[in-house]
Image (tube, rainbow, N blue to C red; front, side, top):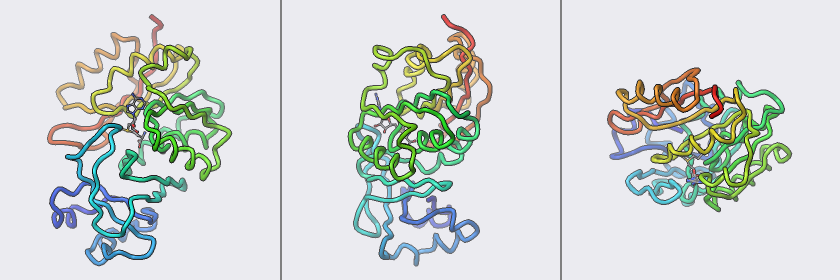
Length: 256
Ligand SMILES: C[S@@+](CC[C@H](N)C(=O)[O-])C[C@H]1O[C@@H](n2cnc3c(N)ncnc32)[C@H](O)[C@@H]1O
């Protein structure tokens, strides 16, 4: 749940908030929902202020609770439900459009690899479209919430969850995937080489990365030198002055 710019000005260094509420219920009512009255703690409603200065291992931010009393929350998105503890697991509600975009591309029966899966917001929508997903995550807490979310969203038979370092996958897996989704943590772009070796020729890779505008042309050339064709790319939001999260839809076009 995002607050409007109007409200954000009232809170220094605000970033994101999660609520025990369904954001879709508030379409067209954003201003009212974001008014100060709605921050008064209510039963089953918690608000968290995310302090991105406190980033730690596993990309979990420090939170200061500004209303409510606990950090376990339920996020609802396009009919899916995600339970997680925001103080222990990374979660970004801003990528909801991307999750639905990828779910609309996947075909039933596809083998999909998702390193850095977190609590499951990419894996679950794709599995619900019939993909067979291998989801990889190194944070034990995220794995625990992912297991619960898989159960809550009734996709137990479509997702295999592995707690592992994604950078070591090529030691144990073969190139059998039709698609990969890589919600890359900052500084981990090297994962693309590992994933490349695990994809079939012609497979799709959705690669998220943080870049400045002037870096994009060089990056596209680099993808093409590395055996990928760029099918589509777009900005998915600003994360720091001049830096955006981008997604690149790549096709593995060569097998080196
Ligand atoms: C940017 S978050 C993305 C989480 C989730 N996909 C989402 O969109 O909410 C990155 C996730 O990767 C995990 N992670 C970081 N390094 C990892 C590694 N080497 N192997 C596996 N998981 C890793 C973190 O614990 C975190 O949950």
